[in-house]
Image (cartoon, rainbow, N blue to C red; front, side, top):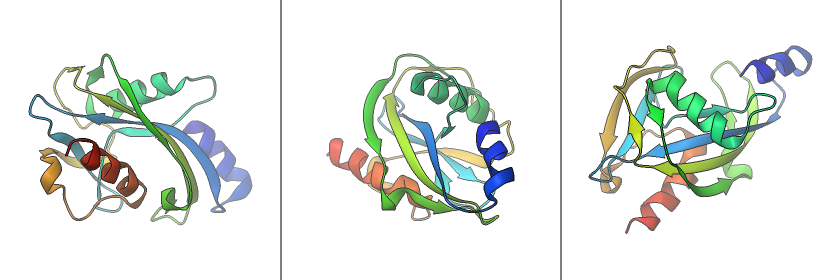
Length: 150
């Protein structure tokens, strides 16, 4: 997020394109790992903004490690998402239009340790019973995930 923080010095809260990567982590029972955000109390998944010079894969793995303490191994491209449904206004007023490359994995190592302060708790959810309060830009991604596993 250092790149985005730097841009914010010039544009304030105005909308930015935020390019990033997300990882949908499924356990052996195909339950989805979700994280409860500290800023808006909505559920999300590991992921975040790309830093200059990173690949999407590097961003996905770095963000997952930073947010959960998990090391991700092999990932499969799940999809690319953009458009008005991925618009988000953060509680501090910053506006973004997300462009997100999303990966799917069952391959992770380590113990979950929420260590960046961005999240308060974690839980694995059955795809048939995802929580009501989901971070808005994640909703179209999870709709596609649920459809894929029907």
